[in-house]
Image 1 (cartoon, helix red, strand yellow):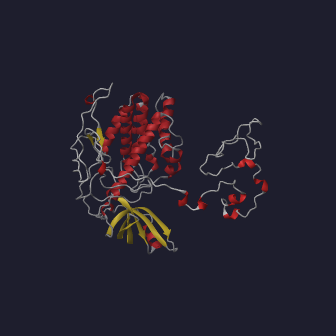
Image 2 (cartoon, helix red, strand yellow; image 1 turned 180 degrees about the vertical axis):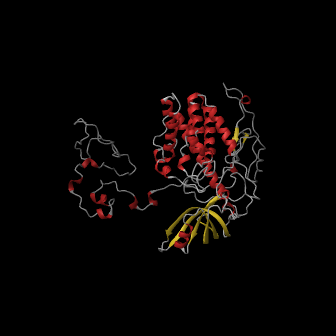
Image 3 (spheres, rainbow, N blue to C red; image 1 turned 120 degrees about the horizontal axis):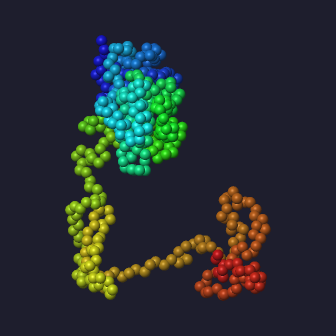
Length: 504
């Protein structure tokens, strides 16, 4: 008698008591901070997966569940770090044959037969006979029979039955549209053939089990290399297949991950390879994010629906679950600040009592040499932050207000040296001394002795004159105050060293 499946991951809520069968995707014995062991599991069904923990009888439960694909788990759910998990009190393994695999293997929501027909049709539309021949030969090969039901990934995107077919059809359809958009810039035959064949190696990278896992060849070689080997083998069975076309097709497969650190031994070096990488990345990420949101979000009518998902470690982000432009229930959506579409203009607010009525305006007079103003487009007045523009009203002629209504303008305040302490003004009577310079040094540097020859040139500091309101007497820039000739004098032929005021 087969076990009955009544509770599914997507329907579970926080604090729910359950006892139901789940597929065992992962089972690890780990250690808590205090050194005690616990059992870390990942349980799944066709609707999703969740983390589970067994805290008691760890070694016994690990040995009990080891080697089984499905078990009945009893416990209570909780939300931890934004994600649903289950604290398991007891678990019983279920032997193979006592459960229906359909409860535990997610399938594509698109009809597999229709997707297969669409992909075969795209392959038949390849114009180049060589690329069309190798593409159809791969799809018809008995070795590739599992392609139509294999998953495209372990868990992130298209990790369902026929997920590889769905992903391949999506990328090939996008490639067909990109070729139509860019025209002669791209070789449609090469691009479409590469799009259909780029993930063929995943047939051998993932196992054919209820719980998807990576095979030994998948770990040692990866689907990029496996797919290239397989396509090369098929090309060898087509008489006279052009070597250069095979090389280009191999490059499409080898470079479709875009970077070496992402599993591609080479980066895209032709336009078609760059486009294939972009489309493959787009379809995988978009579908993966949508799957994650669907797994995390509750139905829109749910009262405890959250606006955001939990943290996605792979993509390093949260994601919004609610419609982005819908206002919350009972709240009227605010109008945008600006709309290009014509609509009713907001009515200006009535003028306040303090606003003066505008004076009558005189008819505008055109300046000489300019067309009349009524021939020019009307000016507009923008209201910053209000999102509309209105025709400007005629500018009133400024009328001087009565003298009595105009308050007497105040003189700006004057600032004199009496407003500040004397110490705030620099003393320009003498050039700075070495003691003055110590005041600008850090405290721990002030006690160091400054040698006498630290300032070897007496002309290092300009000659400042006290500002007593009288202009300083003019003198040659090279003369010294005592009448001696300085370095900047005209007699030694060098230019003056400083301006007459000694500022710069």
